[in-house]
Length: 372
Image (cartoon, rainbow, N blue to C red):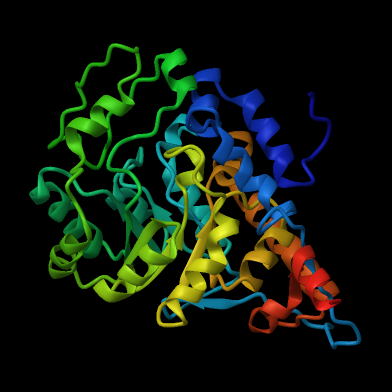
């Protein structure tokens, strides 16, 4: 497909990125694990959420929507809309300036960026690039001293929260990376302390490096250790079940990100939007629940908020905007989602984010049950 003119939605940014990037890098960003079932379901499920029943928006009319307020709070920080930038790896594969450009775009859009520990730029470079609220994402290494050092560097450089990714004791099998013989570049945050020289028989070293460096023994009891080395609130990312949500509350984390790692880890895990309400109900309002996975439209954001998410995080669309148009592209991606969300709220009778409730969405099954 050849694009003509400016993109008008997030899906068109993906095509622009495909045209702009080398195939190896595009496949690295766009691909998912194994059959890519979960990757595809993350987006498709928005059209048929919950037990394969359609989730429809229930608009309320004759509401004063002359002014729409998209702003909200995340861990006490005011942002312009309930749309955050998810942690994603290696932005310099998409743009020469990498995460520094993404950070500037986030600041311009008055939202929060979560910086990946596998960033192309150091956390110090990103922190000094602009004045904004930022979070830092981390995995826990076999070398706990290295993990502690990264956490302390983030806190010292003004990052406001820690995002612990919990769904990656190993790396999912991404066949496109194997075919392309994708080799992990040096990671700026850890290059002085961590070797990436792991070899692999299949041509790509991504899984081998993760197996050699990540602490696969890290478990719930170790959250206490993490909380002792930082004053930053801890969000735990990668939960998909009621049982794990209850455990997260018990260990005292500050919030949950419902996520399946963009379909890059366990294939045939559920699409995140299908389990969001399960997690929200298990938490019972004790801590905030955030959401990522498959968000491509303002209506997707609206549905996630209606099911109980406090905000959504977007990953791949940011990368696509960055690859296609640099900082301007990232800003366009965020603004498109904000504009679509604003219109959805106006047409649904919701003047502010807090007005979006569970009563604004209903599954086909719920509709049929109400008729009995």
